[in-house]
Image (tube, rainbow, N blue to C red; front, side, top):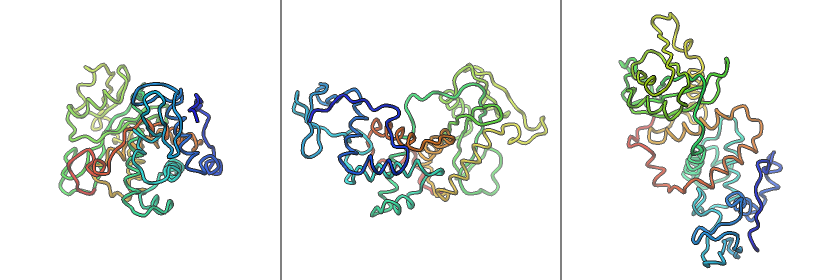
Length: 322
């Protein structure tokens, strides 16, 4: 059967779990939807670049009529090489986005009946890699920036000093009295070399950036930002009063890490949990869970496959539990 040019529109997604169950009741239905999503303008052979000329084999592969090469809807995506049914993957994605605070690996293992905790854990990490959209818009307008620390309490450590904790810098948009979008990143220290690149990556130049008086933010004006320094000592106010939105975002982060994941996160993997938190927080007011599923699936088909060994290694070398 020829692959037709059938675009998947922005409204082409199930609204409820009942609809989801009807739409994706078979492996073939999941594979067909994935194919249409991946090649919305018509099939394009990854081997020779020819368009449209392909047919489905009995094994669910796409056979190019031009070069006789074969590929699949899952090749080059986070699903590549999976031995589990796509329907199980789709269920995992639905549960991941439909729960307000997400799902833990143990919870996912139980609800899907997966044979091992390791499988559930690695699946969630693959999905987290698909939660960040390349080229996403930077924050703009008025933005508050501050740091927080993730990890167990440390004795005789003050200010911005740390021993085993992780440092996370957070930026939050001001939207009147409310919080707009957020961005988060794990950094090695609170120096200007760590803080300035984060702001440049997360906030549009020309925006007004509010920080405390820490010298690590002293280069922001040179980078094209309107830098408003709010000094805690001279104001007579506490940090959470001067920068209420970023501190509220930090509070949500800590509750989410402890509540959903029980705080058992390694430094090497923390960045991916921050990506998930950002994905959820920036869509916290969305009532269309089906749309979140669709957006995650869109990203999943353009996210490179990652092996379990790479996931286990994370982004850092520190493997101490936090």
